[in-house]
Length: 578
Image (cartoon, rainbow, N blue to C red; front, side, top):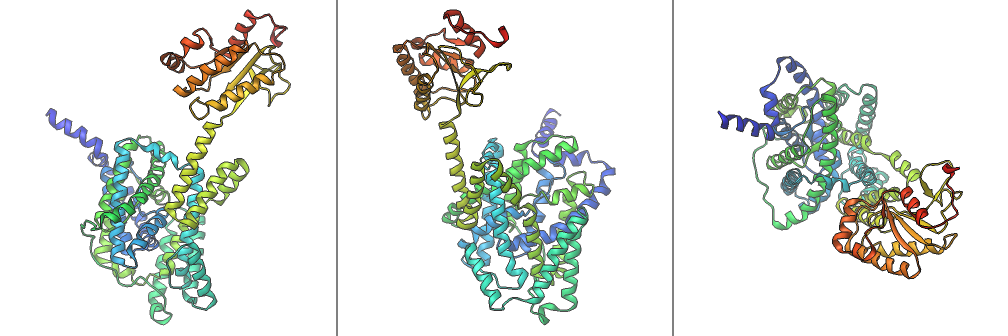
C-alpha cells in the first residue's frame, strides 16, 4: 500500500494532467467539449498556415497541432494552456531548415523534426536543471526588436501568397526585390489578391468586433466554399492546398547527419529560450486567474516532451500560444480535456476530412499568418523606448536590424553579445556620487543633483553604486582621488558609502589596501558606511582588514558623520540641530 501511494505521488509530480482527470467533475465536461471544438476552429487554419510559413507542407501543421495537445494534457501543469505551432518561431524554423534542405521538401520535413527534438531536449534540460533564468537574457528590448523583425520577415514572405506570386528564397532584400519585380512585370494573380486581401481585412475586422467568436473559421470556410463553388483553381489559376495526405502521423525518427545536428543546435537553444519565456509568463497568468499554482520546471519538462514527441511524429517546433489559449479560456475551458477534445477533432479531420481542405486558397493561409504577425508586432514599444531610454532602444533596434537583415540566429546572438557588453559596461562604469546634507531633507544626497547641499568640512562622503571587482577598481580609485582633490575644504577623512557594494573580489581588495596607504600618506583616514556583513567577512578572510583596520565601519552615513564629528573639531551644525 505504501508503494502504491508513493507511485501516485510520483505520478502527480510528473503527470499532473492525469491527476486532474482522476478528480474530473462531470459539470466540467460540457464546457470542455464546447471549448475544445471552438479551439479546433482556430487550430486547423493557423496550424497549416504556420507550417507553410516555416517552409513545410500544410499537413505537417496539423501534425504539429495534434500531438502537443495530447502530450501537454498529460504532462502539463496548466489546466488550459494551449501548445502548438507559433508564429514567432516560423522564421527561426525556416531560417534553419531551408538552407540545409536545398529545395527538398522531404529533407525539410526531416530537419524540422530534428529541430523540434533538439529544442525539446533543451527545454527539458532547462526545466530539470532549473535554468529558466537563461531566458532573462532575452530582455524586453531584445524581444520587441526580435518580434518586429519576425513580423516583417514573415509578412514579406507571405505577401507573394496574397498576390498569387511564386515564392522565392533568400534574405529580406532578395524577397522584396522579387516581389517588386513580379508586380512590375504583371505576374500577380488578381483573384488571389482579391481573395487574400479581403480575407486579411475580414480577419482583422472580426477579431476587433468579435474577439471571442470564431471569425477566422468563418473567413476560411467562406473562402474555401467560394474557391470550390467557382472552381477557381482551374478557372482563375488560384493556388490552393490540393489533396492532403489522409491518416494520422506515424512515428519516425528523423535521420540526419551530425553536421546537421550541429547546424540546428544554436537555433534549438534560441527556440527553447523563446518558448520558455512565452510559456512561463502565460502559465503563471492563467494559474493566478484560476486560483492554482504551476511549477515552471514541470512546465518546461512538458514543453520539452511535447516538442520531442512532435518531432518524432513529423511535426516541427512548437510553443505556447498567447492567441489560442484565450480562445479556450473565453469558451469556458476548465481542464486539459479541452486540449484532448481539440486533438480528437483534428484526428478525425485527418482520417476522414482532409478532402474538405483541398480547395482552401493559399492566399487565405497567407492572410492568416499575416494577421498573426500584425498581432504581435510592437512598433509603439520601440517608439516608447526611444523616448525613455536610448540604450535599450539601441539594443532593440540592433535586434531588429540583425534579425531582419543578417539572419534570425545571427541577429539574436549579436544582440545577446551586445547586451552582455552593455551589462559589463554598466558594472564597469557604475554611478557614483559625492554626498552632502540638504536642509529640510533626511539623509545625505548627491551634490550634483542637489548643488545646494552642504558638505561637512574635512569629510568626503563618496558613494559607489555597484560591486567592486577587477574591472572597475582602478576607476573607483581615480574617482576617490578626484573627489578629494575637488573637495571645498582639505580632506581629513574619506567615508565610502557602501550600501550598494554587494561584493568585493581579491583584486579590488588589494586596490583598497593601496588606496588606504595612499590616503595615509596624505593624512587622510579611510572609513566605510553601510558595508554589508558578508562583504566585510570577505575582507576579513582576504586579510585586508588586518592592513586597513577593523574599526573603520559605521552602520549608516549618519553614524559615520557623528563618528567623524566626535573625533574631529569641525565647524558644523546640522539643520535639525538648530
